[in-house]
Image (cartoon, rainbow, N blue to C red; front, side, top):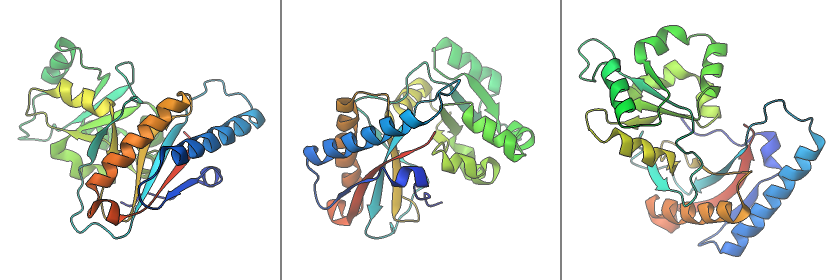
Length: 249
């Protein structure tokens, strides 16, 4: 599914980073503009009882639709991760008949023994039955910072999760439960921006938080731009533009 355009609140804070290779001064100017916009916006809003941090996104526009789209994202390591082991993570597993995935109790024991930061293990059958209504899906989406999923059932998720997961950029990230390195896979997911090259020309990556230091945001953006351009077909010649924007949490 193509990523929707930024909300109206985000449009006014877009900072275009078009052209060939982008200088750090341009990125710093874009970050300054965005943070000033956020500070001005916060000054006019009523305080929230439980304020949530706002994520910052980098929008990559390609010149052409990828000829070999992939459902799996490229993981781009961030110098300053947005998530850490204290984040709330949910792992969706395959419990269909004849599935080779280990039983949920075995997975929970592995998570506990290796101190893997997963707070919820959810069977795919429970996802189907317990989260049918829109409101249940919305609450489920908001309950966790990151979703992981057994790669065997990735193809089942678009119909089960609904639009909220696409809107919030919280599509579950596939993991291979047949391997013994689940902790490594989870830690890598926590510290990466995700680049999906699918069936459209627009790719949105989560690259920062408004609460981070400006220098940290800039360093993350520089790293993601450089790595993303290397993954694009024809590399920089395949890039139309990068743009920075904030989407409300």
